[in-house]
Image (cartoon, rainbow, N blue to C red):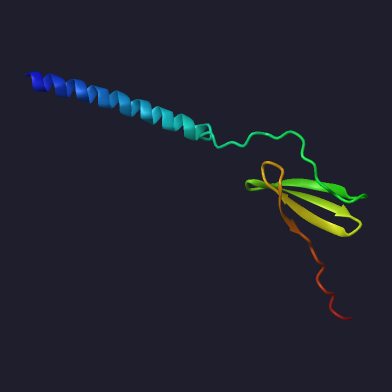
Amino acid sequence: MRALKFLVVAMGVLIVAGTVTLVVLLVQRAGGGGRAVAPTGAVSLDLPEGTRILGVAGAGDRFAVHVEGPGGGRVLLLDARGRLVGEIWPQRAPQPPR
């Protein structure tokens, strides 16, 4: 009889511990799990004089900034902290002869 009481108490503790673990995991996953990047405030881009920002768009976990300046247009790829991680320099396709 004593062993049965011990098993009942032990199983009750396991049920409570499992429920608490499940709730904690659900809250972490619903809230992003603490993987959010802290905002950095202002981001400074070293752009040449006369460069204009034409647009900004989200691109997965990064964002793209379309700029146009004296040297032509390009797309800057920035991470969530505002660091430059890539550049795209579009080129025009050659026109067929007429």
